[in-house]
Length: 142
Image (cartoon, rainbow, N blue to C red; front, side):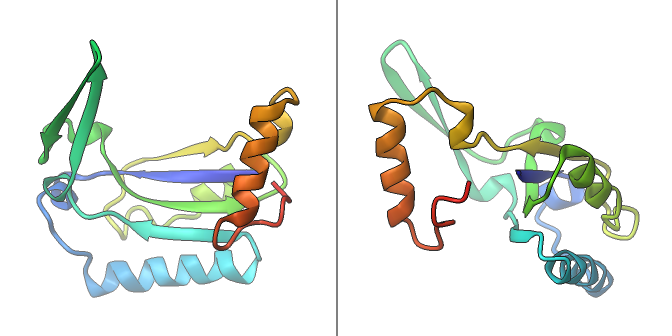
């Protein structure tokens, strides 16, 4: 099962503060553990919301709102995508994140939908074909 571990944005991160050398070293060690265990698929930190935008949909319109956004507790600061056997294993990995060292107050653990979760049909077949053409695809092993 693929799981995304979402890092909640902090006020420092929202203000654009870059990680310290200690933060980078602690995260590097954790990321290496994930990689050594063969579960790490992707990892990234996100720039502050001041560098982003939101697109709202409603009433047939698209409205663009430029950052920064004030609801810091609802923002994403970064993520890991891991491949594990169970939700319990994903939670165990999340518990190992060096949160105190890296100024992380909370992460959210969310499994991805997989193709097997949906009913068969033409739209699902088209989605499988599209995934097969993506760079770095999983070869249909989702």
